[in-house]
Image (cartoon, rainbow, N blue to C red; front, side):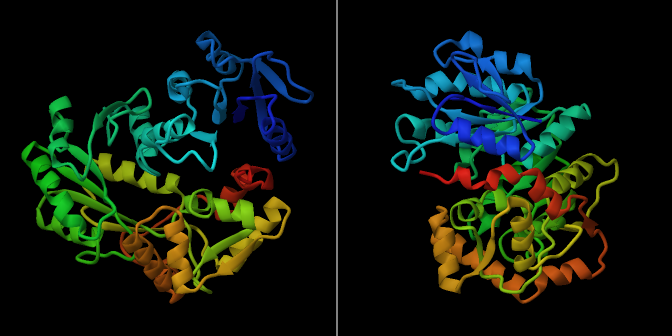
Length: 398
């Protein structure tokens, strides 16, 4: 796979390119001149000339990640948006945007691009599931707040906190008969989701697949209540209960690994069988498409359970610099999650989950045999190696 760097002759792109090359990644530098120093490939690209937007993909059809350096323009989003749309349609799965401490999400200029990229996403598992289903010949409709989704999918505006949007999917497609459910971030999840589930059943939906968690069993907190409700509805159902996501290292912990060489948790010596989103997505596809409904919950764990000291050692080996597990107090853990933009109650819930992990709950799920338990195929060490470029010190924000 290839990483495309826009602003290919700028202050940040060349150092990034060198580090990526040293790590074994294929790199393509995009600039107005199209020239690039050896050993890199270069391609003509000009934000003010949309006819050049296709050139990187004409040259290399393996591009799956893009580093975005925005042009100096009054309306940056208007200029950048067509390229982002094209890139997604060409198979790009990840964008990294160079912004500024002054440019929060939604702010003028780069903040608008930030907001647009975030809104184009459909969650850690949703887009992966959609691609699997589309390749298998299924019709897919993606629901998100903006209604904007990557090609070749259809999108619809849907907001858990605006019940007037609940009918939108069925207005677009009356043939919907299966639904993948991802819960909103609220404490009383069932009260928000129940009206939609009732409407969906009335519209002919016969099967639901719910993304939950190892710690929230039937009747438990948050998604556990939805699990119980689905089972009581006497419809076809499945509940996916994964452990902690491997992808947390490229999202929640990314900044701390890059900037401070640490993985901050309150999990102490608790062992975690981290699971890849790809493994969860594969099971979700089966639960949605198998002729016989699963009608059960699936515990989903990775192939190994590690302590965070062991995980830090894996990062150290792959990054060539010392990465440590930073042991936080409970209050420090809450502040860490709040610093990521999570509300107080969600930050507290995350720390409660980490406390359970410290007490051994995730390791117990890993060791304990159970009906419906699924062990993923992606190994954490392989995940770190494959995504090594994310955590290079050159990615430190300015």
